[in-house]
Image (cartoon, rainbow, N blue to C red; front, side, top):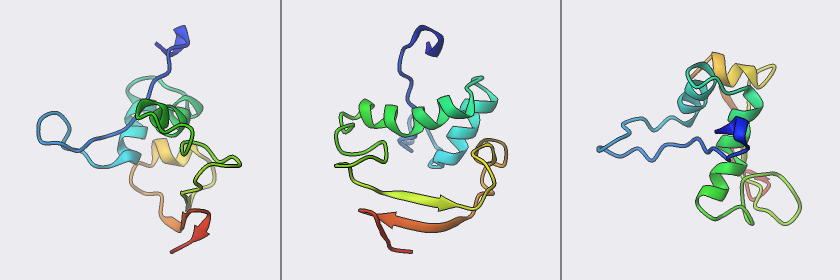
Length: 102
């Protein structure tokens, strides 16, 4: 689908019917390791495309002026850490509306 320029979103809804997983980092890793997505494709699928999937792209999904800046600062040298060290990236900071809250 990505090869045909179809936007793909990665997410979890953690429901008992089809998805018992609540870990977005785990889903991110599956996208890279099992669905042959590049790190960049998985990152866009987990952020901007996920926002489009729920019609909130005007408010969230990317860090740009006018959007709500909710983000994490993770411990890891590169985004590759997210995909290949699933569950090991420690959260260093939590930001809500651009303010550090933890």
